[in-house]
Image (tube, rainbow, N blue to C red):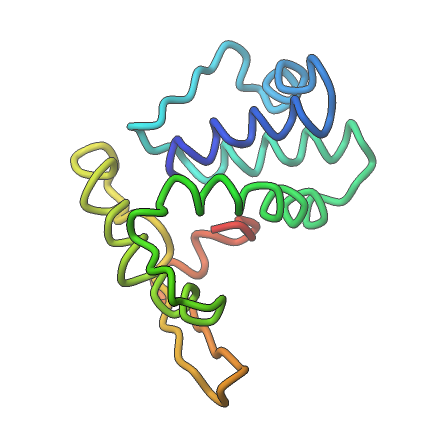
Length: 151
């Protein structure tokens, strides 16, 4: 998992779960003292441990927390990668082009040489009807990224 996701998760924890939530998540997730860096990659298990710790503390299911995190994260990701997003794109265009434009930039940038995995999950999106999108994960990463709903 890209380090940027962990940095955003720390911000989300502070904003949504309160002061001290991140430290509690690190401790409960057995990641005491861990510092995440935007230019590194980390095991998906670390994210799962942190979200599981937050879930246990808040009594909110992990899947719901990941969904909330994903919704909270979208504006920041759109801002971070705005130089790759064309103004004329609608939401479906953005989703269709995420693999080609944004994930490719992530793979070529921060992932280079830092982690054996290729980066974000491969997606194979396609447009069905004008208002429908069909997206399929690549089979190689599907099993390894269970529980990483935001990926």
